Amino acid sequence: MEVDAAAYRIVQEAVANVIRHADTDVCRILISFRKAELFVEVVDDGSGRSQQPGSGLGLVGMRERVEILHGRITTGPRPEGGFRVAAHLPLPVA
Image 1: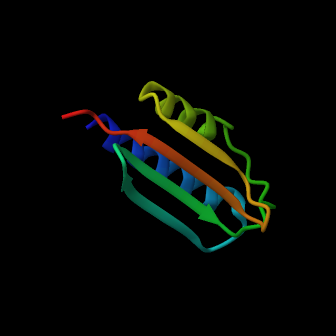
Image 2 (image 1 turned 120 degrees about the vertical axis):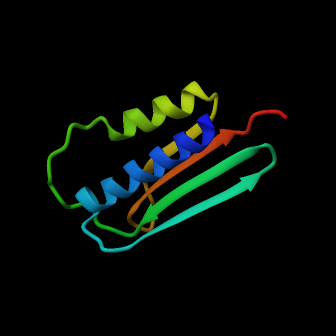
């Protein structure tokens, strides 16, 4: 259940960041299961030019959620433009 909640919040915050900062109307969300982990990715092709101020805690909060679950997250601009958030969340052992 913790993995589900973390994935939901990561997608929620990443999409909110696209709306606030990416200066685009489109983003792609990918959620997939891989060997013993849930993979979540949010990618946009925006310019990042929107200057709408925020608390600056969105990426920090995502990183903290992932670290609590001993997962991995990468965030940052893409070489071809836009921004990417990718999180690997380990699934509980049955």
